[in-house]
Image 1: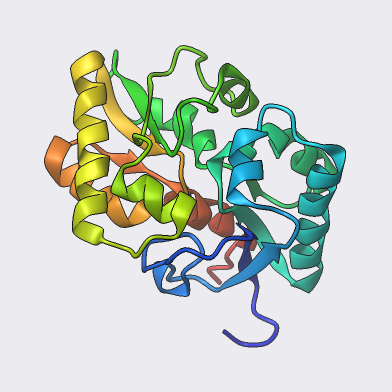
Image 2: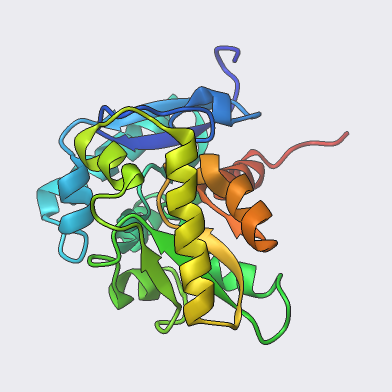
Length: 234
């Protein structure tokens, strides 16, 4: 990436687990210019477990790191956790000229217009205990949107919570089981949105297992970058 090239700013939670290609904070995930910025005063616990009532100090930390990225030349922003949906309107208001992709959940309304009529989107999340109607309302999604969380103690959960080694095959099994279980519970699901920004490496295996389209933070990042770049064709 050249020095003055416009880029997508990825605002990352301060975490230390493996981030392979596909993960939002891996540069190998992107075919566009990307820079990663760490919100130092954050943790997986805080970003997930307190997402229904973030502290003012925590919110300000995300405002500050977004401002840094934009001042450096970011033409659009995404974050590394879908639970940050609850501060989406704060960032929107603070940076009205920059497309802000705070959460992959923002794609739910448009995704539902791209699938079979009468079908709806199902959400696979890192932790269904803390993903609430407040998050869905913040992104303009139907409050009754079906949600399933990766089980506590599963290999994917341990990767994020305990920084256990990355195991693609096992994590893939976890995500496929979530998708299949949600389909068994809701036969009207016609596609999935992955809340967790560490789930895009498994988009393909979910698609192959279910035959349904999948949206995630990488699909959102590419979208907001194109909007922010306003590419010139002549």
